[in-house]
Amino acid sequence: MGIVRGGDAEYEEFEPSYEEKAEKLEAIIKPLLEENPGSLKLSGKYIATDEINIIGNYSPIKAVRSLDLSDNQINDEALKSLFESDNLSGLEELYLQINFLTGNGLSEVAKSENVKLKNLKVLVLSDNRLSDSSIAEFLNSTHFQNLESLDVGWNEAGNETAKALGTTTTFPKLKKLEMERSYIEEEGFIELVKGDIADQLEVLDLSANKINDASMKILAEAPKWKSLKTLRISQNRFGNEGAKFLGESESMSGLTQLYVGRNYFDAEGAQAIYESKTLKNLKTLIMKEEIDEGSGLVNYSRPELLRPDDPNAI
Image (cartoon, rainbow, N blue to C red):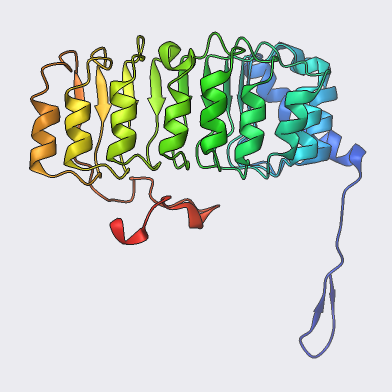
């Protein structure tokens, strides 16, 4: 930085070389791997494309099974490099929430013939800018047949994603699906309940979608949900009618945890759920959720996605 008389300041931008970045990043990674060779947490380290290439080419990374790259600057180009890294082929858990992904990279990964991360069991992609179509393409990919848990919440998942969930046959082990703050509508739910995924899932998070009474009827009356234990449908749009559909659901009788707070039903709807003769296995039932600092209402990276609904309804 050069200081000029009169109070003006001139700043010289400094961009370290690839070699300097590699030296710095490897100095961070090495002690972390010495402490725990199977898990590496690199959240909030300003990791971008060069850093992803450095990580992917760093041979000691081969032992890592869980990699946390959340809250960084990973873009679509870097995503493809990450998924095509030979050294990361043993990964079982990958956390990529709060990055710069728009969906182009995810689409390329879905179609790539060089994907190496085929052992993934847990993948978190929430709070990016993934398009509906890119998530749908991912769900039709054949690369991730070992995946057990997928989080695509706080993106643009909508009816195309729901349709893909209703038709895909390439996720036989998927047990947990999180799609909080998404945009699935009635037509999407009709498609979603057609496939095998609905019978596989043990945990489903549809908080803050567009579930109205008609959508609740589709979900509650679908002859599916054979494995479902936990359902999160807080912050949606259904009222007393939808609550009654839920309370009378025989297909959801296996539920042990149900979260339905901050919908539009009143005491009548709450009673229909609480006194349900079919939801007999519930151990946890949350029908009222207070608004506080921990309620997750604010998405700091995408404040326009507070809720895919009329803001006056909050």
